[in-house]
Image (cartoon, rainbow, N blue to C red; front, side, top):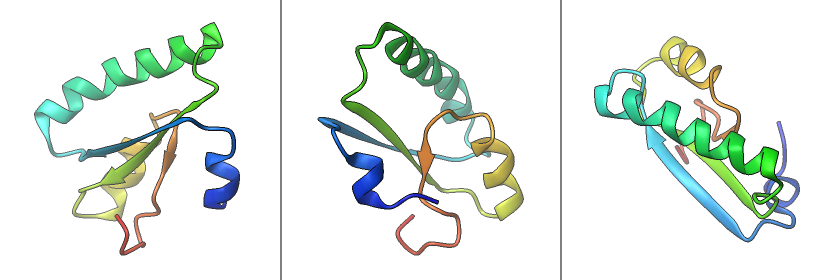
Length: 82
């Protein structure tokens, strides 16, 4: 768990990624977004970038298994904000 202030400190760009485990187009796009995110972090060009996952999953188990593969932050499944 991290506060918004800590998560976004020094970030110039915050991307909100709405996706779900059950969504085939999302499942195809997620690896591409992960590759971009990881390459940006390795290159040192993404210090001002953060991605936040907003799950549309219908059950917590799906959220947990899908989010486990992601290198970025997520709004908690229990949160009404997602």
